Amino acid sequence: DIQMTQSPSSLSASVGDRVTITCRASQGIRTELSWLQQKPGKAPKRLIYAVSSLESGVPSRFSGSGSGTEFTLTISSLQPEDFATYYCLHHHSYPLTFGQGTKLEIK
Amino acid sequence: EVHLVESGGGLVQPGGSLRLSCAASGFTFKNYWMGWVRQAPGKGLEWLANIKQDGSEKYYVDSVKGRFTISRDNAKNSLYLQMNSLRAEDTAVYYCARAWSYSSGWFDYWGQGTLVTVSS
Image (tube, rainbow over all chains, first blue to last red):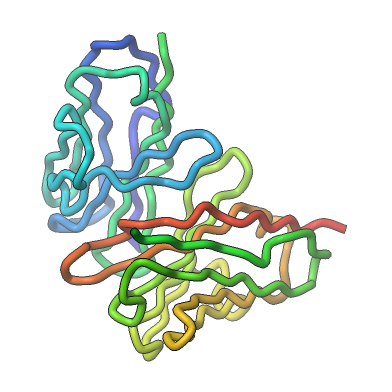
């Protein structure tokens, strides 16, 4: 099974900051990775698919990069609505696995 | 507009069974793989199962294999999760999701979730 190690598990940042979240796969997953955002009490929402393709309607301050085993989600300038929990998800092979999540909090 | 609406959650005793349903609308259901994902209270997301468009292929995470069964009825635009031999650790919010198609990729739409509580 492929394990996804996501870091950091929590992050405190201010509005306007640039933040980066990393996911490392235990083996190569090519570009078969998505990023999701979840706000408290809500369903997850896909932000990025295929490593770097932005979901329709998602602000361009979100971006994804990486390949193989290391992937990053970057938010270029944090906005108040971005404070949430973020998950990576690999879909290279079964079983699919999520990263442990990164809780982004306001400093 | 795509809508996925889960139902069937509730309180069940350990060892009991429950059947979750997911009603889909706003897209051609039979063209998509569908899946279930859960989230225990205060924890992260766990993928559980996916089912192919025609139901001919099903995949499960080991923790539910042999206890949970995913199925679908394309005529009713519905997805199901039959859960047997439930344990306390199955307590979670269960999400239905549109799992995959060539044009839309993976897990692009999610339902609002239904809470399953396993407790005596």
